[in-house]
Length: 636
Image (cartoon, rainbow, N blue to C red; front, side, top):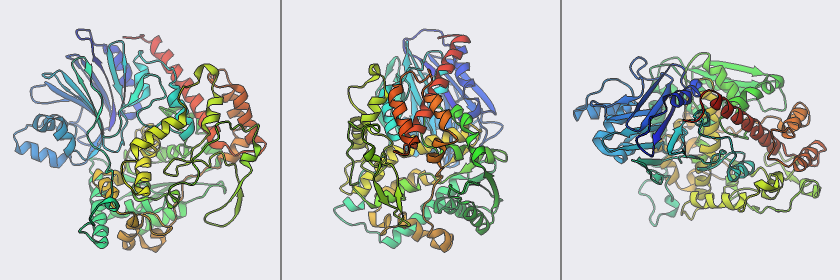
């Protein structure tokens, strides 16, 4: 696990910028405090920072093949590297290390880039240079667990694991891409290949970017989620439901086993919900070694506290329970730390508890397993039970100062039957049911006139979702593909990557083993949704392992009391930040209307206010990174 960065000379014959590469690598220190390495030759400057997990002594990067014409830097882990290592040795390749990264250079020699990628099981982003072919490949793992960004500037192609690395190059400015910013305010995350910085792009999950000489080829998919399920097949599967349930158990057990491959201790993030409890149970089946389980709770009674369930899960599987209890003031004290480590704006308030959990776990170890992905693969969210969503239309002329009745609607709580008066600002949703955070019409009003866009955010997100949903006739299959292509990699996995790596902690996600993902997306809907219960196949496959308490638990999340915090503890801080001179792309009148609507109780727009606060804080930090880069050396 580490961070990678580099320069590629697209014009040819220029001196490679050693000092800029060093600055990019140093900007990722927290991602890999155990060491660093660079390689500068043949038109490519490759660099990395290392968090030592496998082959602690011998796994320094960049790593080359026997004659040195192929070299690679990788961020991530290859869980089947030992199997591939043995196969390649049997074919005559000589290894200098036990590192999983070295499998890439020999595997590329043996199978080519497509053959190599098809054989990899892991989370990764890598840059591989073939000097003889004058080609560099940038590749990202199937589900998008690890990030990879790139940009073309002044005849250079820059790439890196973080925006910070690109900003440190001295070639990337902090100018906002307002297409991306509008999507961020709609969704609370930046989706797809967009980046909040103009001219910077993400490499999409399961995609490959090839740079051949001075030509940057269009990124192409080397893997994608299955587009159809057994519900779409003209003939039913030869396997019975019982056989599919058994297969689910075997696949997930093996996924957890291989995700535990490490030369250092592996722990687990434990909430006590079905997903993390299942991972812990399978860890215990895979090893007799001690397992530490990390969990956090909150003294604030407005927050649902799962720590008692987490403790019970740890006791059930003989794990060492490592809890921490936080007050509201302790959580709020982490806001500066959070906005300092978020490498791009993520308006998901659950970043705060994940940051605290990462800080707790890093006191003892470097690697944890986490439960991300189960909901998007096996239909864990409640909104999947009402597909297609009933109302996906926004009023583009919406204004909280003019239409207070828009917020005054009530709805019946789905689980407990109570009537809750809440703002309906978030009542509209994507085709999956994922709730949008703000009306596109009001997003447009937030920006000063010179930042207005020709195509609004709703049109852009509909275009993305149309590409993501696939060709299935089943609405659940389409909804799951949308969330697994957007919300999962661009919010949940980005959140986990940024908050864990800020503390030099590696988080692995066994549910996103590609074999599990392909299996899940081919399942019929009845094995995911069973009446009003999601993840039906997991509950059936692991009922004996989990026990009734955990098998029947409803889903809960880290739901911080942001509504109240925005009206009390955070009120003045958010107001001053959003009306500060640094928020120079926002219309202060529109911001004031939003703030006042929330404060007076006419609206519950805490998601929007938090997203704006994170955006402005992140942007000011990005600007400071650019100023620092120019002070220490300027552009290459």
